[in-house]
Amino acid sequence: MAKTASALHILVDNEQKAKDILQQLQQGADFQQLAKKHSTCPSKRDGGNLGEFRQGDMVPAFDKAVFSCELLKPFGPVKTQFGYHIIKVLYRN
Image (cartoon, rainbow, N blue to C red):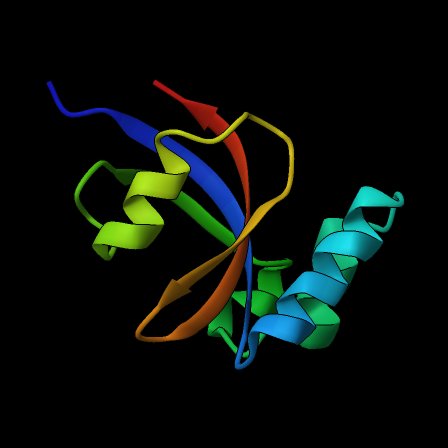
């Protein structure tokens, strides 16, 4: 059976901006607020929430990060063809 996960993400167009956002998160900033303010993904309307998805549904670099990083801890930046992601995995099954 395929593994599933639920995650939030913030997508930006450059690595430095992603690093700046990650630093803000590490200092206690609210993930969903920053997603609404900075993300270029349509998911920003929902605080970056991607909902539940299966392993293999996302592009390889994103997928690998989601299924290997620490739960509930902002992770990144992860570079894909879409830009730079900061990811927060809510759960994995």
